[in-house]
Length: 193
Image 1 (cartoon, rainbow, N blue to C red):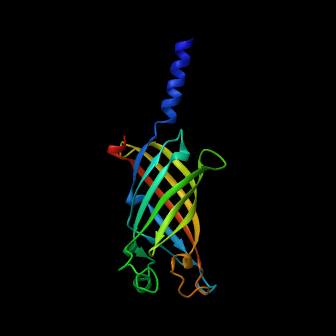
Image 2 (tube, one colour):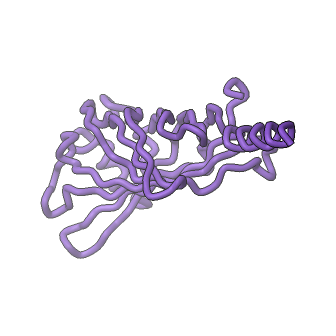
Image 3 (tube, one colour):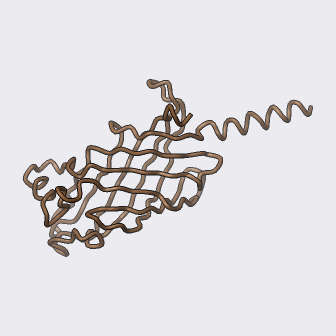
């Protein structure tokens, strides 16, 4: 009886920590989509196409998770080339001087269940660093059927003010508040196994 209990406990622990690893974000399945209000008429959106990062995550200790992400600001895409060009100029993101945005988590809290988290971190954008809170949902943690590696996927949302980062041109007609929707898949890093 005791060996069975030990085996059951070991299997339970192994299952809980099966996805305790360092993961590398899959840029082909990672998107940061942003949207804003344009003079009250519409809610355009765009996204960044080049995102890199890592995630340390252990299902048995989720509040110890860490995430670091960098975004290539030149990869901005609104599907309007003239707008993309304008957003890269000095009155907005000034990508010549600030080519990257970064996010580094500082605190992870559990939410309403074991699939929901609140991740606070420092967002550095346009040379300004401010705390941002992400509401995060764990979509899936399982062996990836095509990659033959452990994988994990999350969605997240946040709202930030452009003016907090010195990018407040044309506010309030173009809304100061910007909504973010993030989705990512990440594969276990060979070095993080």
